[in-house]
Image (cartoon, rainbow, N blue to C red; front, side, top):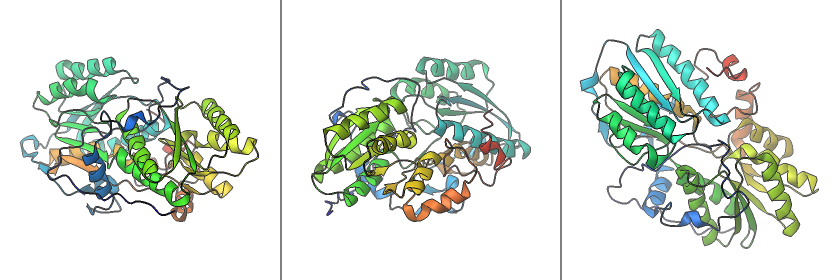
Length: 402
């Protein structure tokens, strides 16, 4: 199909994209799961044209650093001077984590702990005290305040549960004068020493919508399966995709699923009974197999689909020969906060906004990633980036979650 390409125009000195966030949140919340959102996420609350344009530009950016170590690459931009924190003594890191409640976060948490072992052995970090908020804003706020008052922390690492609610707590951590590393999900302040994240939700939405538009015809129908409302990176994924679908005459209907495989299968079954479904768009791919099973049960051909780099989708894709794309929200980012502390301990400059590569897996690359991750469980993510860490591959295969 001929696509109306949007021209990416960077907005001068664009502000930090603090509303970049995380992967899926499968905490069990399921608000509005039986209703479509009718594209409401494209409104001004969640959609910012300047951020859309910036992330489209960043998808083609040249990244600094070794491409064999994408967790250390970054887009050239403002740097933070860390010389005041230079030290020869091992640092105690205090990590306030949103949760490990879904496979993406579990995979990253395993990788992070294996990276920690290396830095402990090298005398960079003495220990990492971690508090898990279990997807609860109030719990994470209390965790951060505990670290500030009683944690004896040399540095803070924070993966916020949500954007606005955690902002004041992050600011309080900054006020201690200790280095603060925010990663994955963003907050509404730029006080952190560095904010680490892949390109972002708009880039995910652009890559996936472009792929579907290229493989569909004007007037075709796409069913969008979304996890839940109110998570910034998920909202911007859909906001970007919806904009591109609308501009190219693709009919869409979207549902919140609560990441429930039974609900996903039921939604697709109902949509099939209404008429032909040509495409499936997902803001996280770990429910993709359930969506495809609905087509199998109905005896229908598979649609064009965008999933994710979770192994269950990659395996289903190979097994069926369907037309697919695996967008990525780079799981290897879980290594970067600890490696940022290593650079801080050396007094080295680090990116103020540390934007990591975010490249989808195409059909041409799929088999290489399947081979490289042979033996990994279905909930593993192909671009986890831990192949050079101790314990590989056993720790990830056995899901040894600390």
